[in-house]
Length: 167
Length: 125
Image 1 (cartoon, helix red, strand yellow):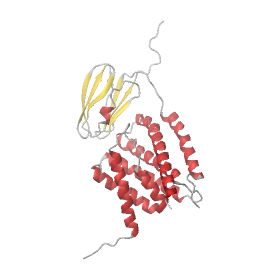
Image 2 (tube, chains in turn green, blue; image 1 turned 45 degrees about the vertical axis):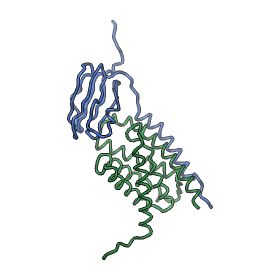
Image 3 (cartoon, one colour; image 1 turned 30 degrees about the horizontal axis):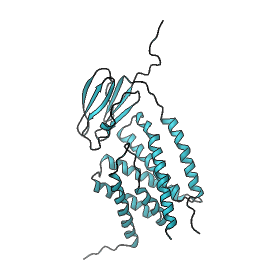
Image 4 (tube, one colour; image 1 turned 135 degrees about the horizontal axis):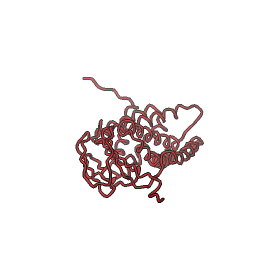
């Protein structure tokens, strides 16, 4: 019989992804004042992962969360998934660039803000190009970005505080 | 040494993003609170001929997952029913001002109000 050998990193990714998925699903039960606005609490797992384990683990955790989370919520391959996935990709792209920049050392707050804004911009761009290519949608963009900055800042501060307490 | 709670690069990001927001509002958010008189309905990316808001009526529009019902009444319009899960279009409520916008993303129906942009109510000679 074949056994699948798993590494410590695999286990770590699975644990972190499970945590992110749980938060993602719990959050989907919260009411939202405007489509597209939500606290993005699962972002905290992403940022903490990035600060502790680096880019590779973060990419895995993020993509697993979006795909497995959508399977559990029943939104896989629906417009919701498309938006969520493009947001995750955009934020991953921004985080990759920020992480690889030499000589600049971002902390949790900087990463969190960049990720939140990247997520929102990517998601918005796809919503605009794919679903409703109409200039009126652009009116919503500043409001959505305000929410992204606000929630990105708050979750960044939470992660930074948490990381300080980890020995 | 413990890392700082907020690094210098973090402050840079915070300041930059806070500076970005007013610019976004100035660029994308131009309010226009005059009453609209036409509605433009966009179905699956294609715009239908504009419809007057001054004639009360009900519209049924076939989108990509079913039929949505719109109601026009006293210069305003709303989604009455849509076959989507979130019902965000229905919760948008009545729209009556120039530039207002509501959409049912799953059904790919969007509507925007326009017109009534005249700068003067009447001319007297």
